[in-house]
Amino acid sequence: MTMHRREFLKAGVALTFAAELPTPARADVNFDPTPGTWRTYQIVTRLELAKPDGVSQAWIPLPSVNQKDWIKSSGSQWTTNGKATLARDRHYGAEMLHVAWAASEEAPVVEVTSRIATQDRAVDFTKPGTLEIDLASADRKFNTAGTELIPVDGIVKQTSDKITTGRKTEIEKVHAIYEWIVENTFRDAKVRGCGIGDIAAMLKTGNLAGKCADLNALFVGLVRAAGIPARDVYGIRVAPSKFGFKALSAGSEVITKAQHCRAEVFLTGYGWVATDPADVRKVVLEEPPTNLAIDDPKVAAARKTLFGAWEGNWLAYNFAHDVALPGSNGPKLAFLMYPQGETGNSRLDCLDADNFKYTIKSKELTAA
Amino acid sequence: MGVDRHPGPAHNTFVVTIGWAPEVRGILWMKAVAALCCAGAAFYFATLPALEAARGHVVLVHFFATWCESCREELPALNRLAVRAGGNVTVLGIAVADADQRMQGFFATTPVDFPILLDRDRAAAKACQVATLPTTFVLDADLHPSFVVGTDCAWDGVDPKELTSTSDRRGCAACKQKSQQLITFLGG
Image (cartoon, rainbow over all chains, first blue to last red; front, top):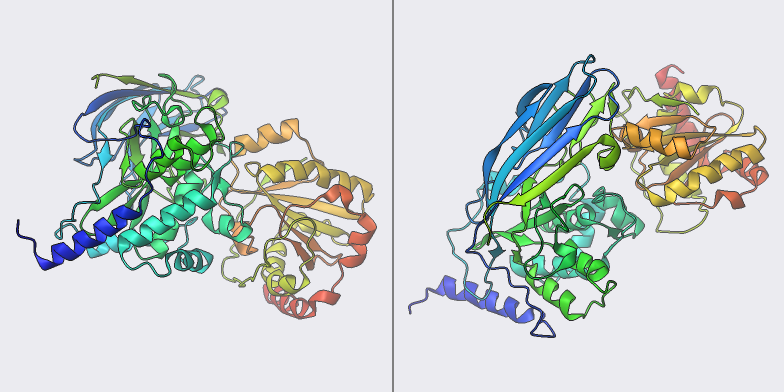
């Protein structure tokens, strides 16, 4: 085999990095997402405004991420007694169904059926990257910029610099930040929904508790502050984990409260790489028998795997931040992961599905 | 309890950089910090008609959110503090980035006697450089910010007399001068 010098150097970096990865303490914990088997799901979101009070509107996130190596969206269909419009966020391309009802409508309702296919993702860091895989300058700039709640300067930059001191390559820096998140944050079951994602407040207070939209947002912000492209991916779990991780599963066909945010980093030579440090902390807190030690074999397996891989039992809605809802005078959303609604110019509580109200159901159409 | 939707005044034209103190717990009277930050907050508070009626009292402007766990515990304690103060302390709550329906549901089960402004887009929090929740500004009788409590606080342990006696301008002379200029500039 002939290996060019630059490829050799890259391979050396990857192999050195791979040697740093923790090894599961027990071989019987199998968490090995492997691409190759696509699974198709039908997602039905039904929204009924429980207490309409004048003119009402709703916005339902639609699966709008199409990446040939892990997710394909086949579009959505809907029925409603309102006026429905397919809308798209102009910055991120996040799609949503915008439905408006007249004040005379006493029972606003909309049902959206979406179909997606996903498969596992995994990057093999022991193999050299492909030099041609790089990000266009504009995309690199976009994915290293700050957002409303994810600044990349000030305390975020200071923290990122501290974590990455002495780390030379992109992979080494990102992995150091990933490990820092795993070791310094924790999942707080009391946090509503998936959290807010106000990462500067987290760092300023020293309160690093939260859920996925907090912990993975902090990860993304720290990586961006290091000058490396990263993005949150907002979505929802659609199926149980085939590896038996209860904490990383949709518990039933009703996935109304199964929203989950993951993260990607762009590593030159490898492209967009799957990461999910927040799910490591979820395994620590929730995987039976719960409150696992950081060196528990299940935690060790998740910690190793979720840097570079994730299981395809989850769909991605979008990558969007600071989303303005079309037709609304209300504030922008930090992210669009839950159905949204307004009635009588009041924003409904998207985390209170039972009173809002809405349900989301998932059904696998193609068995693995 | 009255709930108003804040109109969102054009306050973003003036921003003061704040250097928040390190993390603390319990009551923190940050005079030095207040000297830096209260000019921006004073500018903002001067735009709030809801505060004018409180002139002559010590006022606690309390930034919170119902999605913030410690905030939820603190609101009833603030209400009790105002009652204990017998009219000498007024509280104004500012709910940051809270959904309207969530607010209504929360205060239906946890009523308070003081008014709540809805800072739906974080504009008020930004104008006052509020970095964490909860944060409470203590204003003197002239509605001048004297202190900032930049963390959660056990208000049930605060003596209202102590609060009124410490919320004067002595620790914030520079701020007083600056904020007075701003208020004058606004034509107030």
